Length: 480
Ligand code: NAI
Image 1 (spheres, rainbow, N blue to C red):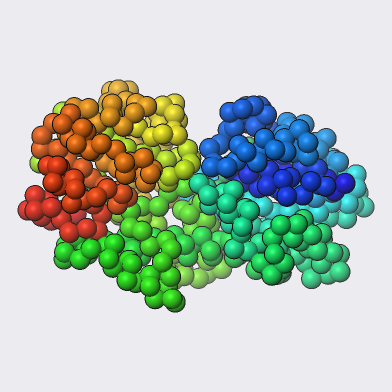
Image 2 (cartoon, rainbow, N blue to C red):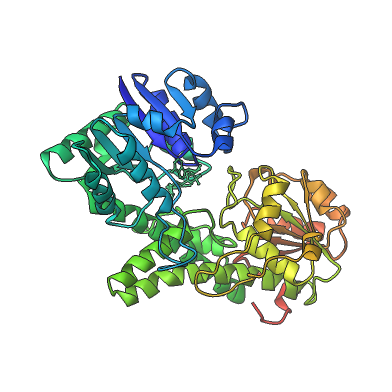
């Protein structure tokens, strides 16, 4: 039986390994983590992450050929293939702070592998890492090798949170990079044999190590760029009366462009896009390609601009002050179908509203009150420029409440901000909500989920990103 061990039981390690276990009954998969709480949750009925379809997959194989453990060293020692899926956040201090990837967790995992291994291993980079990381890892492993043969592969993960299980069942492609030596190619084939248990062979791409590492950064940067591109057009739509939905649809019909990732919004979030672009920026800078670095920085700048533009729109529409006003925030996760709030635009938007002295009442179907309070009080690190960076004072914290119901959150509110595109926000009884709000009742849709015309008929003053402005909003000063 082939034994796989995955270091890191997070958003990537957990779902990826669960699907490998399901699709490869002859492989034993153990997911290990230093976080006892996370492993306990994986072994319980309340999994540590919300992902549609995940419960079902875990239920089918946990205890059979899928295991979750904190005994990291034992399972690394026993494994033939070791996936490393630890976090690789942006460095917050020292050389490259604010841009470079922090490889502390990666390096400590590599050193631990070197310490405990007694047999040959294939070590697979699952985490997103800077191009050339495999070379550094190879050095750590081979300088401590005690005669053991290590093969490093790069197998970046392209799943998207919210659709992880679907993406893993039916990936557009699986990418495996390896050394072009006979041993390297043998390792590539061994990993390919795992994936081809369910992925058609023509979707498994094999490349050299550096292409695989760089592809992941490039793919995320280009995806994020599409969002910033359409968001930059949304401002112009509002100023001219063009409708972003119509523009995006018509642009996306060009087969060279395609329809996906062209939804205008309050901005992208998630743990990967900003981090991976900054990582790419840093690598470009290190190689001296400053123009290329600046090019990619603009993708993040437009994203920050979109968030401030949204806050400014709310404040300007509501008579230039939010003092003494209640704003209901519907949705806090960075997108629907996940409880993940890492880099969610809701954090910056809420901080912006609070800075203008609003009281806010937040509802998200998957995010707990604890998480929201943690996110809002955390001192956000500055990548290049400050945006609502100050930690919240205790008095400001008191102005945030979290509810478990959209109707409760909006009761008595002066305005509503929709910040995540949860399906349930489309089907809310907006007449009932309107009746229980202060008038004029404002609704700011940061995800283009509501039917603007219907809401205007009810009586709301509606702002929806990139849509022709309500006459009310049209007379506001051009601050946004
Ligand atoms: P995560 O933070 O959810 O999980 C990482 C886990 O690794 C944590 O539970 C942590 O306790 C554990 N860990 C850290 N050091 C360890 C060590 N030495 N030994 C054992 N466990 C250790 O991170 P996530 O979101 O799963 O991301 C992992 C990697 O995958 C990152 O490089 C990320 O960029 C990449 N990625 C993330 C995607 C996403 O949608 N979240 C998609 C594709 C790639």
